[in-house]
Length: 372
Image 1 (cartoon, helix red, strand yellow):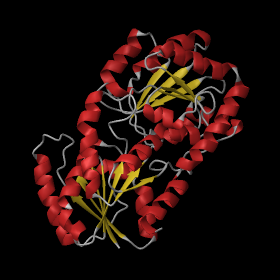
Image 2 (cartoon, helix red, strand yellow):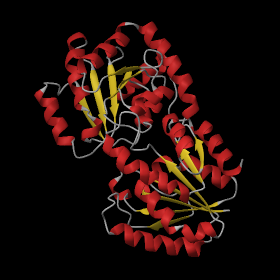
Image 3 (cartoon, one colour):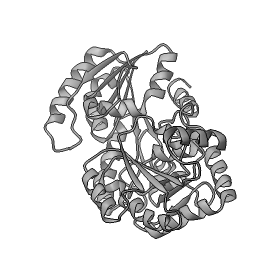
Image 4 (tube, one colour):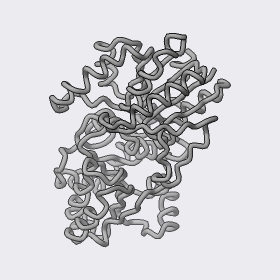
């Protein structure tokens, strides 16, 4: 079987679809990728696990004429490729692919689309429902299977859309990288990385964008350091907000307590030494950083949004607080620091819950969709 994976950018395939490619290769499939090459912007990412790669000038903007050129190139690749399955991802990558694959689908090719979080959901702006909902509903007629990664999206699509709808538990997180370590190992790793055994350590992961709202975590640190003066918050990620966040750290007097890690390819090392993960974003689909923390048996304190609600059952496997309520975030973090038994129970619940989202589980779900 010959399979073509498409997305707006190649980094999307690198970051989210290795489990799928491993399933396909295990069944003897040949796997090609068509997406815009943006890997120079992403340190450490390589698309070296597929059989062929096409650089297609997709644009995230629906107004860009690049998508017309991308559609023409993609149609030629599809028509000449003889693909049995075409699996598209991302909003613009999905629309352009489904238009380009019209002839191939008539000739028997199977078309799948993975929705990594609809823009319309409970609490979304009315504009999102007016614009994105009718587009996705219309294009659902142009694929054979829609794969959703949140239960909310699954329920809506199952009821309203015009194709087979499946649900999987995200894109998978590698349980061989993210796993619990015992206290002795945690302390050893802390010493090895240059941090004291009793120091309180926090982690915040995400691209440095306004939506990720890392300022909330910086503000929470002001209250946390009143109780634990040597506590440290690690902020992992790069992006256009870097200078603004550095200015905020300085304005809050947190230079000794907040460390910017930049783009980090070994986040598992930090998950294995920290005490808690904080997540502050306004919007999320299904955030991998929370799953990574939970698989590592770290408690999570996160802002309320639909992606965080999908993973966090408040008070059981983590805490939810309102966006921009830095005091509430600090209060929940401190409650975990001050009550090790509560933290341990929450860690155990989080790890058990997150196992459904690990590579092994998601690969089983993908295998059932493709070959069941």
